View 1: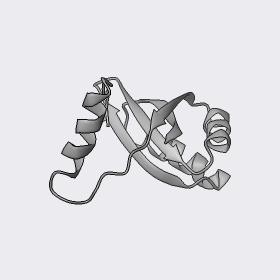
View 2: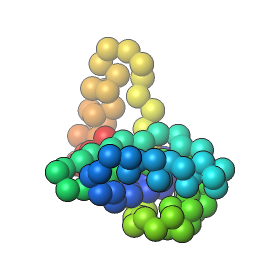
View 3: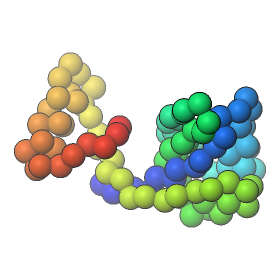
Length: 100
């Protein structure tokens, strides 16, 4: 299934994660999942939320730079080899996994 993912660019400074989380809390947006990748200077916070349009507005209103992308959501069986079986299907389709 395709869903919308928000990517938020953050300066790599102590406490910077608080701003987007607070903005979403104040807007009543539920974070379903997130990941944070960082370098020395900046980080990219990737979010899946219950209302991406409301979240995008709240984050932008808080002064953050937000990018929206459609991503594939796949349920992985919770057993040894579960991810391997999903990757078999993805590989057979000739699809590249950029990140997960």
